[in-house]
Length: 325
Ligand SMILES: NC(=O)c1ccc[n+]([C@@H]2O[C@H](COP(=O)([O-])OP(=O)(O)OC[C@H]3O[C@@H](n4cnc5c(N)ncnc54)[C@H](O)[C@@H]3O)[C@@H](O)[C@H]2O)c1
Figure 1 (cartoon, rainbow, N blue to C red):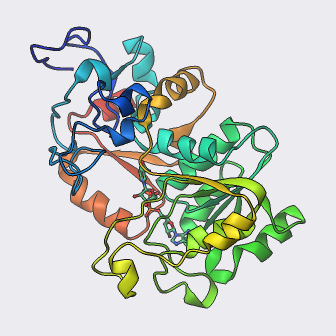
Figure 2 (cartoon, rainbow, N blue to C red):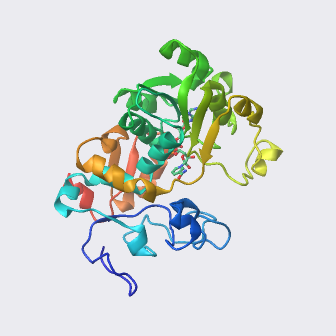
Figure 3 (cartoon, helix red, strand yellow):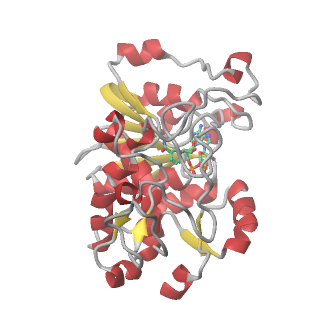
Protein backbone atom coordinates (compact mmCIF):
# COMPACT_ATOMS: atom_id res chain seq x y z
CA UNK A 1 0.00 0.00 0.00
CA UNK A 2 1.62 3.25 -1.11
CA UNK A 3 -1.16 5.71 -0.37
CA UNK A 4 -4.69 5.80 1.07
CA UNK A 5 -7.76 7.89 0.36
CA UNK A 6 -9.58 9.94 2.98
CA UNK A 7 -12.18 7.25 3.81
CA UNK A 8 -9.70 4.43 4.38
CA UNK A 9 -9.56 3.80 8.13
CA UNK A 10 -7.82 0.49 8.81
CA UNK A 11 -5.42 -0.27 5.96
CA UNK A 12 -2.19 1.70 6.45
CA UNK A 13 0.57 2.86 4.12
CA UNK A 14 3.25 0.14 4.04
CA UNK A 15 0.82 -2.77 4.58
CA UNK A 16 1.36 -5.78 2.32
CA UNK A 17 -1.99 -6.85 0.91
CA UNK A 18 -3.75 -9.08 -1.59
CA UNK A 19 -6.33 -7.51 -3.94
CA UNK A 20 -9.27 -9.77 -4.91
CA UNK A 21 -10.06 -9.47 -8.62
CA UNK A 22 -13.71 -8.77 -7.75
CA UNK A 23 -14.56 -5.20 -6.86
CA UNK A 24 -17.20 -5.09 -4.16
CA UNK A 25 -18.77 -2.34 -2.07
CA UNK A 26 -19.21 -4.25 1.21
CA UNK A 27 -22.56 -2.56 1.80
CA UNK A 28 -25.11 -4.21 -0.52
CA UNK A 29 -27.19 -7.29 0.20
CA UNK A 30 -24.96 -9.58 -1.88
CA UNK A 31 -21.74 -8.39 -0.26
CA UNK A 32 -23.29 -8.87 3.18
CA UNK A 33 -24.17 -12.44 2.16
CA UNK A 34 -20.56 -13.06 1.02
CA UNK A 35 -21.43 -12.96 -2.69
CA UNK A 36 -18.80 -10.40 -3.60
CA UNK A 37 -18.67 -11.61 -7.23
CA UNK A 38 -22.11 -10.09 -7.78
CA UNK A 39 -21.87 -6.83 -5.82
CA UNK A 40 -24.84 -4.64 -6.71
CA UNK A 41 -23.18 -1.24 -6.49
CA UNK A 42 -20.00 -1.29 -8.57
CA UNK A 43 -21.28 -1.85 -12.10
CA UNK A 44 -24.18 0.21 -13.46
CA UNK A 45 -25.04 -2.44 -16.09
CA UNK A 46 -25.44 -5.54 -13.90
CA UNK A 47 -24.17 -7.05 -10.64
CA UNK A 48 -20.49 -7.98 -10.51
CA UNK A 49 -17.30 -6.19 -11.42
CA UNK A 50 -13.56 -6.66 -11.88
CA UNK A 51 -10.49 -4.60 -12.73
CA UNK A 52 -9.96 -3.94 -16.44
CA UNK A 53 -12.60 -6.37 -17.61
CA UNK A 54 -14.88 -5.71 -20.55
CA UNK A 55 -18.47 -4.91 -19.58
CA UNK A 56 -17.73 -4.86 -15.85
CA UNK A 57 -18.17 -1.32 -14.74
CA UNK A 58 -15.28 0.40 -16.53
CA UNK A 59 -12.74 0.04 -13.70
CA UNK A 60 -9.13 0.50 -14.81
CA UNK A 61 -7.05 -2.70 -15.05
CA UNK A 62 -4.63 -3.85 -12.38
CA UNK A 63 -1.79 -4.88 -14.71
CA UNK A 64 0.06 -1.64 -14.07
CA UNK A 65 2.62 -0.05 -11.79
CA UNK A 66 -0.10 0.96 -9.35
CA UNK A 67 -3.79 0.22 -8.98
CA UNK A 68 -6.55 2.17 -7.26
CA UNK A 69 -8.58 -0.11 -4.98
CA UNK A 70 -12.04 1.19 -4.13
CA UNK A 71 -13.54 0.40 -0.70
CA UNK A 72 -10.06 -0.63 0.39
CA UNK A 73 -10.83 -1.55 4.01
CA UNK A 74 -13.40 -4.04 2.72
CA UNK A 75 -11.64 -5.40 -0.36
CA UNK A 76 -8.05 -5.85 0.75
CA UNK A 77 -6.65 -8.85 2.60
CA UNK A 78 -3.73 -7.73 4.77
CA UNK A 79 -0.94 -10.25 5.33
CA UNK A 80 -0.38 -10.50 9.10
CA UNK A 81 3.42 -10.62 9.05
CA UNK A 82 5.17 -8.83 6.22
CA UNK A 83 8.51 -10.66 6.51
CA UNK A 84 6.87 -14.10 6.59
CA UNK A 85 4.63 -13.13 3.71
CA UNK A 86 7.61 -12.01 1.61
CA UNK A 87 9.05 -15.53 1.92
CA UNK A 88 5.96 -16.90 0.16
CA UNK A 89 5.09 -13.92 -1.97
CA UNK A 90 4.84 -15.77 -5.31
CA UNK A 91 2.38 -18.24 -3.75
CA UNK A 92 0.45 -15.43 -2.08
CA UNK A 93 0.15 -13.66 -5.45
CA UNK A 94 -2.17 -16.52 -6.49
CA UNK A 95 -4.73 -15.39 -3.88
CA UNK A 96 -5.98 -12.56 -6.06
CA UNK A 97 -7.68 -14.88 -8.53
CA UNK A 98 -6.76 -18.38 -9.63
CA UNK A 99 -6.31 -20.12 -6.27
CA UNK A 100 -9.65 -19.04 -4.75
CA UNK A 101 -11.29 -19.62 -8.15
CA UNK A 102 -10.02 -23.20 -8.39
CA UNK A 103 -10.88 -23.77 -4.73
CA UNK A 104 -14.40 -22.39 -5.28
CA UNK A 105 -14.82 -24.81 -8.18
CA UNK A 106 -13.95 -27.75 -5.91
CA UNK A 107 -16.03 -26.55 -2.95
CA UNK A 108 -19.01 -26.08 -5.31
CA UNK A 109 -18.44 -29.56 -6.70
CA UNK A 110 -18.56 -30.97 -3.16
CA UNK A 111 -14.97 -32.27 -3.03
CA UNK A 112 -14.31 -34.03 0.30
CA UNK A 113 -11.82 -36.51 1.75
CA UNK A 114 -11.84 -39.57 -0.50
CA UNK A 115 -13.58 -37.90 -3.47
CA UNK A 116 -12.79 -38.75 -7.06
CA UNK A 117 -12.63 -35.53 -9.08
CA UNK A 118 -12.64 -34.73 -12.81
CA UNK A 119 -11.21 -31.33 -13.68
CA UNK A 120 -11.62 -30.13 -17.26
CA UNK A 121 -8.80 -27.78 -18.22
CA UNK A 122 -5.14 -27.74 -17.17
CA UNK A 123 -4.67 -23.99 -17.48
CA UNK A 124 -3.89 -21.98 -14.35
CA UNK A 125 -7.45 -22.28 -13.02
CA UNK A 126 -7.61 -26.02 -13.67
CA UNK A 127 -4.25 -26.61 -11.97
CA UNK A 128 -5.35 -24.42 -9.06
CA UNK A 129 -8.54 -26.51 -8.84
CA UNK A 130 -6.47 -29.71 -8.84
CA UNK A 131 -4.28 -28.30 -6.06
CA UNK A 132 -7.44 -27.38 -4.15
CA UNK A 133 -8.93 -30.84 -4.61
CA UNK A 134 -5.88 -32.37 -2.92
CA UNK A 135 -6.07 -29.74 -0.16
CA UNK A 136 -9.70 -30.77 0.43
CA UNK A 137 -8.65 -34.43 0.69
CA UNK A 138 -9.57 -35.87 -2.73
CA UNK A 139 -8.43 -39.45 -3.30
CA UNK A 140 -8.02 -39.17 -7.07
CA UNK A 141 -7.74 -36.01 -9.14
CA UNK A 142 -8.08 -36.42 -12.90
CA UNK A 143 -7.12 -33.41 -15.02
CA UNK A 144 -8.17 -33.27 -18.67
CA UNK A 145 -6.86 -31.10 -21.49
CA UNK A 146 -5.53 -31.44 -25.00
CA UNK A 147 -2.32 -29.56 -24.28
CA UNK A 148 0.36 -32.13 -23.49
CA UNK A 149 2.72 -29.73 -21.73
CA UNK A 150 -0.07 -28.62 -19.38
CA UNK A 151 -1.05 -32.23 -18.69
CA UNK A 152 2.60 -33.00 -17.86
CA UNK A 153 2.54 -30.10 -15.39
CA UNK A 154 -0.58 -31.61 -13.71
CA UNK A 155 1.24 -34.94 -13.50
CA UNK A 156 4.14 -33.35 -11.55
CA UNK A 157 1.99 -33.01 -8.43
CA UNK A 158 0.14 -36.30 -8.47
CA UNK A 159 -2.79 -35.80 -10.84
CA UNK A 160 -3.98 -38.46 -13.25
CA UNK A 161 -4.34 -37.00 -16.73
CA UNK A 162 -6.62 -37.41 -19.73
CA UNK A 163 -5.97 -36.11 -23.23
CA UNK A 164 -9.42 -35.27 -24.62
CA UNK A 165 -8.01 -35.13 -28.16
CA UNK A 166 -7.76 -38.93 -27.92
CA UNK A 167 -11.48 -39.39 -27.35
CA UNK A 168 -14.29 -39.17 -24.82
CA UNK A 169 -13.09 -38.70 -21.23
CA UNK A 170 -15.57 -41.29 -19.94
CA UNK A 171 -13.60 -44.23 -21.39
CA UNK A 172 -10.34 -42.87 -20.02
CA UNK A 173 -11.93 -42.28 -16.59
CA UNK A 174 -13.00 -45.92 -16.53
CA UNK A 175 -9.45 -46.94 -17.32
CA UNK A 176 -8.15 -44.90 -14.34
CA UNK A 177 -10.85 -45.58 -11.75
CA UNK A 178 -12.31 -48.89 -12.84
CA UNK A 179 -15.68 -47.17 -13.33
CA UNK A 180 -16.75 -44.46 -15.79
CA UNK A 181 -17.97 -41.96 -13.17
CA UNK A 182 -16.50 -39.48 -10.71
CA UNK A 183 -17.99 -37.99 -7.53
CA UNK A 184 -17.29 -34.36 -8.41
CA UNK A 185 -16.45 -32.37 -11.54
CA UNK A 186 -15.04 -28.90 -12.23
CA UNK A 187 -15.24 -26.92 -15.48
CA UNK A 188 -12.04 -24.87 -15.71
CA UNK A 189 -12.42 -24.31 -19.47
CA UNK A 190 -15.58 -22.31 -20.22
CA UNK A 191 -17.18 -21.34 -23.53
CA UNK A 192 -13.93 -21.59 -25.53
CA UNK A 193 -13.97 -25.38 -25.06
CA UNK A 194 -12.73 -27.59 -27.85
CA UNK A 195 -14.55 -30.70 -28.88
CA UNK A 196 -13.29 -34.17 -27.99
CA UNK A 197 -11.64 -36.78 -30.20
CA UNK A 198 -11.87 -35.92 -33.90
CA UNK A 199 -13.64 -32.63 -33.03
CA UNK A 200 -10.76 -31.33 -30.94
CA UNK A 201 -9.60 -28.87 -33.60
CA UNK A 202 -12.88 -26.91 -33.30
CA UNK A 203 -14.58 -24.91 -30.59
CA UNK A 204 -17.67 -26.60 -29.14
CA UNK A 205 -18.78 -24.34 -26.29
CA UNK A 206 -21.14 -26.82 -24.60
CA UNK A 207 -18.71 -29.75 -24.66
CA UNK A 208 -17.34 -29.46 -21.16
CA UNK A 209 -20.72 -28.89 -19.52
CA UNK A 210 -22.17 -31.94 -21.26
CA UNK A 211 -19.16 -34.08 -20.38
CA UNK A 212 -19.37 -33.03 -16.74
CA UNK A 213 -23.01 -34.15 -16.59
CA UNK A 214 -22.10 -37.36 -18.37
CA UNK A 215 -19.26 -38.38 -16.05
CA UNK A 216 -20.52 -37.15 -12.67
CA UNK A 217 -22.37 -39.68 -10.54
CA UNK A 218 -26.07 -39.21 -9.85
CA UNK A 219 -26.47 -36.89 -6.88
CA UNK A 220 -23.08 -35.28 -7.53
CA UNK A 221 -22.27 -31.63 -8.11
CA UNK A 222 -20.53 -29.56 -10.78
CA UNK A 223 -18.39 -26.51 -10.04
CA UNK A 224 -18.31 -24.20 -13.05
CA UNK A 225 -15.76 -21.40 -12.68
CA UNK A 226 -15.08 -21.59 -16.46
CA UNK A 227 -16.49 -18.49 -18.12
CA UNK A 228 -19.74 -18.44 -20.12
CA UNK A 229 -20.78 -15.23 -21.83
CA UNK A 230 -24.10 -13.52 -22.52
CA UNK A 231 -23.06 -13.08 -26.16
CA UNK A 232 -20.24 -14.40 -28.36
CA UNK A 233 -20.36 -12.68 -31.77
CA UNK A 234 -17.61 -14.98 -33.12
CA UNK A 235 -19.46 -18.22 -32.27
CA UNK A 236 -20.12 -20.73 -35.05
CA UNK A 237 -23.74 -21.38 -34.08
CA UNK A 238 -26.34 -18.63 -34.26
CA UNK A 239 -27.76 -19.44 -30.82
CA UNK A 240 -24.29 -19.32 -29.20
CA UNK A 241 -23.86 -15.79 -30.58
CA UNK A 242 -26.56 -14.87 -28.07
CA UNK A 243 -25.17 -16.98 -25.23
CA UNK A 244 -27.47 -20.00 -25.73
CA UNK A 245 -25.76 -23.39 -25.67
CA UNK A 246 -27.10 -26.89 -26.32
CA UNK A 247 -26.62 -28.36 -22.90
CA UNK A 248 -28.21 -31.67 -21.91
CA UNK A 249 -30.09 -30.26 -18.94
CA UNK A 250 -32.41 -33.29 -19.04
CA UNK A 251 -29.46 -35.53 -18.24
CA UNK A 252 -28.38 -33.25 -15.40
CA UNK A 253 -31.95 -33.22 -14.07
CA UNK A 254 -32.26 -36.99 -14.27
CA UNK A 255 -29.05 -37.34 -12.25
CA UNK A 256 -30.13 -34.69 -9.67
CA UNK A 257 -26.99 -32.70 -10.29
CA UNK A 258 -26.49 -29.38 -8.63
CA UNK A 259 -24.22 -26.79 -10.18
CA UNK A 260 -22.68 -23.46 -9.26
CA UNK A 261 -21.55 -20.92 -11.85
CA UNK A 262 -20.28 -17.36 -11.87
CA UNK A 263 -17.40 -15.24 -10.66
CA UNK A 264 -15.61 -16.65 -7.65
CA UNK A 265 -16.31 -14.63 -4.49
CA UNK A 266 -12.59 -14.39 -3.70
CA UNK A 267 -13.06 -12.96 -0.23
CA UNK A 268 -14.90 -16.09 0.89
CA UNK A 269 -11.71 -18.14 0.59
CA UNK A 270 -8.60 -15.95 0.43
CA UNK A 271 -7.92 -15.83 4.18
CA UNK A 272 -8.15 -19.63 4.57
CA UNK A 273 -5.90 -20.18 1.57
CA UNK A 274 -3.43 -17.55 2.81
CA UNK A 275 -3.11 -19.52 6.07
CA UNK A 276 -2.59 -22.77 4.14
CA UNK A 277 0.22 -21.11 2.14
CA UNK A 278 1.89 -19.42 5.11
CA UNK A 279 1.89 -22.69 7.06
CA UNK A 280 3.27 -24.83 4.22
CA UNK A 281 0.10 -26.84 3.60
CA UNK A 282 0.09 -26.15 -0.12
CA UNK A 283 2.48 -25.22 -2.91
CA UNK A 284 0.27 -23.41 -5.36
CA UNK A 285 3.03 -21.44 -7.16
CA UNK A 286 4.98 -24.60 -7.94
CA UNK A 287 1.89 -26.50 -9.08
CA UNK A 288 0.78 -23.82 -11.55
CA UNK A 289 4.39 -23.13 -12.55
CA UNK A 290 4.09 -19.45 -11.55
CA UNK A 291 6.63 -17.35 -13.41
CA UNK A 292 7.28 -13.71 -12.56
CA UNK A 293 8.08 -11.35 -15.45
CA UNK A 294 8.66 -7.58 -15.53
CA UNK A 295 5.72 -5.43 -16.63
CA UNK A 296 7.41 -4.46 -19.90
CA UNK A 297 7.59 -8.16 -20.85
CA UNK A 298 3.82 -8.56 -20.51
CA UNK A 299 3.26 -8.75 -24.32
CA UNK A 300 5.66 -11.72 -24.50
CA UNK A 301 3.90 -13.34 -21.53
CA UNK A 302 0.51 -12.91 -23.18
CA UNK A 303 1.80 -14.29 -26.46
CA UNK A 304 3.30 -17.39 -24.85
CA UNK A 305 0.21 -17.92 -22.71
CA UNK A 306 -2.01 -17.71 -25.82
CA UNK A 307 0.23 -20.35 -27.41
CA UNK A 308 -0.59 -22.64 -24.45
CA UNK A 309 2.52 -22.32 -22.27
CA UNK A 310 2.24 -24.41 -19.10
CA UNK A 311 2.87 -21.37 -16.92
CA UNK A 312 1.02 -18.83 -14.85
CA UNK A 313 2.69 -15.53 -15.68
CA UNK A 314 2.77 -13.02 -12.85
CA UNK A 315 3.55 -9.39 -13.66
CA UNK A 316 6.15 -7.94 -11.32
CA UNK A 317 6.19 -4.19 -12.01
CA UNK A 318 8.64 -3.19 -9.27
CA UNK A 319 10.92 -6.25 -9.21
CA UNK A 320 9.55 -7.24 -5.79
CA UNK A 321 9.03 -10.90 -6.68
CA UNK A 322 12.39 -11.13 -8.42
CA UNK A 323 14.15 -9.70 -5.34
CA UNK A 324 12.24 -12.04 -2.99
CA UNK A 325 13.33 -15.12 -4.92
N1 LIG B 1 -15.24 -17.81 -12.28
C1 LIG B 1 -14.23 -17.00 -12.06
O1 LIG B 1 -14.23 -16.20 -11.12
C2 LIG B 1 -13.02 -17.08 -12.95
C3 LIG B 1 -11.81 -16.51 -12.55
C4 LIG B 1 -10.69 -16.68 -13.38
C5 LIG B 1 -10.81 -17.36 -14.59
N2 LIG B 1 -12.04 -17.87 -14.94
C6 LIG B 1 -12.24 -18.63 -16.17
O2 LIG B 1 -11.75 -19.96 -15.95
C7 LIG B 1 -11.42 -20.54 -17.22
C8 LIG B 1 -10.02 -21.12 -17.16
O3 LIG B 1 -9.06 -20.10 -16.98
P1 LIG B 1 -7.53 -20.34 -17.38
O4 LIG B 1 -6.80 -19.07 -17.14
O5 LIG B 1 -7.04 -21.59 -16.74
O6 LIG B 1 -7.73 -20.55 -18.96
P2 LIG B 1 -6.86 -21.24 -20.08
O7 LIG B 1 -7.46 -20.83 -21.37
O8 LIG B 1 -5.40 -21.00 -19.83
O9 LIG B 1 -7.10 -22.81 -19.85
C9 LIG B 1 -8.16 -23.52 -20.40
C10 LIG B 1 -7.63 -24.88 -20.80
O10 LIG B 1 -8.73 -25.69 -21.23
C11 LIG B 1 -8.25 -26.53 -22.26
N3 LIG B 1 -9.41 -27.12 -22.96
C12 LIG B 1 -10.08 -26.67 -24.06
N4 LIG B 1 -11.10 -27.49 -24.36
C13 LIG B 1 -11.10 -28.48 -23.42
C14 LIG B 1 -11.92 -29.63 -23.19
N5 LIG B 1 -12.96 -29.92 -23.97
N6 LIG B 1 -11.63 -30.42 -22.12
C15 LIG B 1 -10.57 -30.16 -21.32
N7 LIG B 1 -9.75 -29.08 -21.50
C16 LIG B 1 -10.02 -28.26 -22.53
C17 LIG B 1 -7.34 -25.63 -23.08
O11 LIG B 1 -6.44 -26.39 -23.88
C18 LIG B 1 -6.64 -24.83 -21.97
O12 LIG B 1 -5.40 -25.43 -21.58
C19 LIG B 1 -11.60 -19.42 -18.25
O13 LIG B 1 -12.89 -19.55 -18.83
C20 LIG B 1 -11.51 -18.16 -17.40
O14 LIG B 1 -12.14 -17.06 -18.00
C21 LIG B 1 -13.13 -17.74 -14.14
